[in-house]
Length: 172
Image (cartoon, rainbow, N blue to C red; front, side):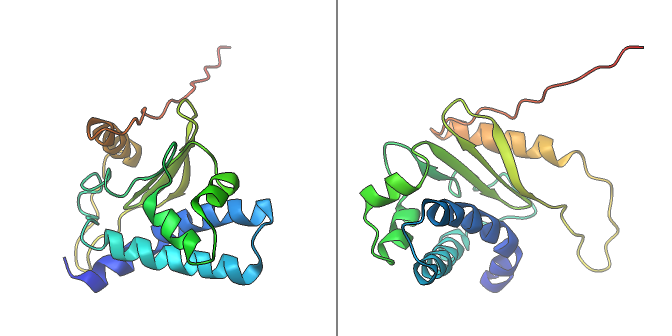
């Protein structure tokens, strides 16, 4: 896959992930606007570079474990690198970000979980677009393919429970 093509197609997903993490820094109020902009731009560049050979829109599950951002007893090195560019130490990042965070950055979906037992929430979701000249066949539910991505990441040593849905029935 051509690098420029890969970067272009992952931009909305990376933007959603970076925006999510940047909000934590803004909410805690320990960084100024310039630092926040630098952090966001740095993390966007770092993730784009890191994911450029691991982004497969035609097979969104492929590379999912590699693209998972994880903060637990260890700071994710990519987030740590962006934080250090604005003068934040790893300990300061631990104070600003959730202590248990898993962020999945996959083609067509960005989702997160706070805490090991937390619910998985979707930050960004889109439908794949067909190449020009191709007809769009109604794909299976997008959510199903992403559940398998997260389950596959669990097989790679990451704990990723599948999404749970509450069903409400109405009887009359």
